[in-house]
Image (cartoon, rainbow, N blue to C red; front, side, top):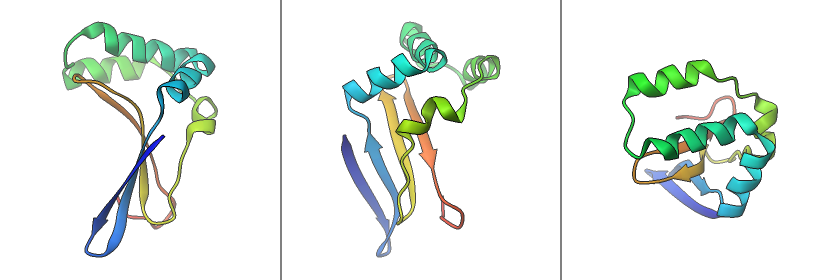
Length: 102
């Protein structure tokens, strides 16, 4: 796991956590729907348009329970949990608590 803290005038606004390859594989094995989405993105071989992404996301139903083990929150600001990043896409689970800024 790799963590980055970004600050805005002395206060942390966002923490970024990159899941390790093993964590991503574990997440994919625990959520077939998410696994299918990642494989679909990988198979595109290029950056998808927003229309293509929107159509795909409307077709799937990922439940919070599928991601629960990999949800990460920060006390200092919202947290970007990077599931997978390639040259063509970045799949991020963004989590924040009530009252935190985004």
